Each structure stands twice: as structure tokens, then as C-alpha cells.
Image (cartoon, rainbow, N blue to C red; front, side, top):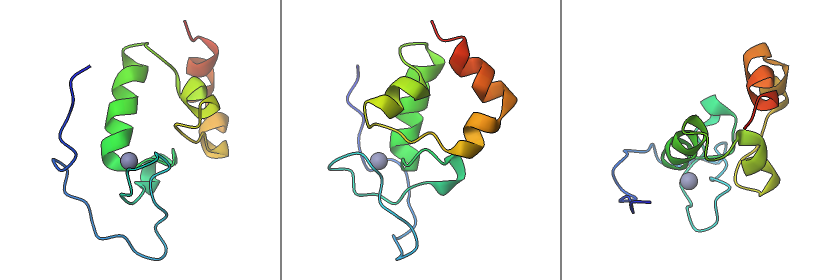
Length: 86
Ligand SMILES: [Zn+2]
């Protein structure tokens, strides 16, 4: 897996209302739009693994590397996708 630079994505300054990314040592603000508990950079990397079927959001969540929000679980596509994991 290639090592990516950590400063390639411009991030807004953290605010009191934006929790930090759940990945240890990351410290960037969460990208709340995805509801995964990850910043934009970590989400992009995790999403790449999920899309290439190396893991699933469910597995990442079980390992503490992502949060599956209840909204996502109620989404028909995400639910079906998680059930069809390889
Ligand atoms: Zn992060």
C-alpha cells in the first residue's frame, strides 16, 4: 500500500463543534457529511479499500476504524451492500 502524504487535502480549521477523526494520530476534523467518524483523507483511503473489496465499512467499524451511523444502516443500498460482502 502506497504511503500517502498527510497534507495533500486542504482541511478547514477544527472548531469546537467538529470532532476529530477517530483514527489515532490523525487529529484532523471529521468530515461529518459521510458520518463515518473519519476526516476527508482517512475516509478517502478507507473508501478505496471498501470499493476494492479489501474490507467493508462494517469490518472497519468492528476494528474501530470507522463508525457506521444509523442513518447509513437504514439506507437500502448501504444495507444491501454490507450484506453482500465478500
Ligand atoms: Zn483522519
